[in-house]
Amino acid sequence: MQVKEKCSVLYLIGRQMFRILFGLFYRWHIEGVENIPQSGGAIIAPNHISFFDPPLTGSAMKRPLYFMAKKELFNIPVFGWMIKQTNAFPVKRGTQDMVAMRQAFSLLKNGHLLLIFPEGTRSKDAKIGKARTGAGMMACNAQVPLIPVKIEHTNTMIKFKQIRIKYGKPIYPLKEFKKSDYINLSQKALDAIAKM
Image 1: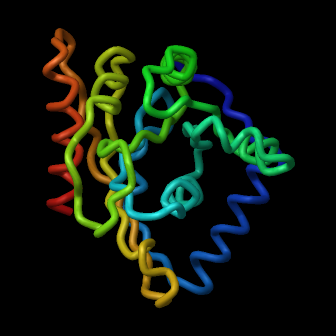
Image 2: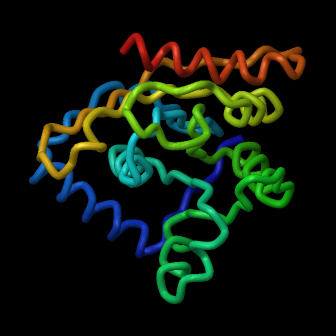
């Protein structure tokens, strides 16, 4: 389903500011943007090594990107309002938050791009961690592709190394699937990232 995608003014300003930051100070190198679908729902599935990964991933793309953020952040005055304006929506971590899951599913079915980390959490040593079911489960049930994304050097930003981001080929879920396929699909995304 094709939808007209809109961004808030704050989203557009933030994206431009991050583009300037990553381009000027980190000489960011972007590859594979042609692998991002021009329309329709998809899960953008990067490895996760830094808090800068979501804005980096979204800033390198033309289409708006939605993502989950822990619920506590939305309770912070001003900041909570700001992240909501930049396409974030709350999730209760450590539980099966059905409200957040329904919102994520709705976004995908309505043709939007959603960021989900296949590892489910940030890696402390910058190595690719274990696959979790989340990304694969959402892709299977919404019947949308996973776009693996390799991110490098956002964990060493203080050293001003060149940041690299590469979008891989879409990985499509099976039409008929079982629960064990959830983690298998997440693992396929991580395997693709490791080979980039």
